[in-house]
Amino acid sequence: MYRLFVAIDLPEDVRAEIRDLQRVIPGVKWVDMAQFHLTLRFIGDADEALFDRIRDELSGIKSPPFSLSLRGVGYFPPKRDPRVLWVGIDRSETLFGLRNLVEKALVRSGIEPEGRSFSPHITIARIKGAKVSPLSALLRDHERFAVQPFPVSEFILYSSTLRPQGAIHRKEAVYPLSGGPGNVSDDDAGAA
Image (tube, rainbow, N blue to C red):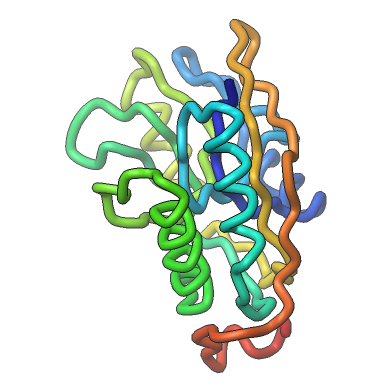
């Protein structure tokens, strides 16, 4: 049995910039720098047959390379006790186009359609019982956080094994972005 998700990895220098946001806050468990990624779609449990169908359907995706930039720090859910601290992604039509292609491929493979809208972000911490004031200070201190655009040339099918110390992610398949129908805006064209 596999526990699967589809994601975009971040370059090492981008991971380091995100890691620099981390500070000691009681009730905040920071994600290990090696685990930073942009989830395109969480799939969940899959047996061997479903895993093979998913892997094959994803291999048919044609989308151009593009660039992404990170901006802002916030938390989910927005109007209740925070549970997840995140770094935001600047809007990219090509990213949304790729995410839609991934969703269609997964539905063709037998996965139920995603019920939530896509809200691209990098999870940087999980929150349990943290006081609001240190979180507010962190958000205020980094309200202008931004990372220069970086190239995205592939997406990855990951499996995840949950452990008490944290999840272990394993690359199951890597899919290069090499063209095809995509929505390349002026903002995205520079990295292609």
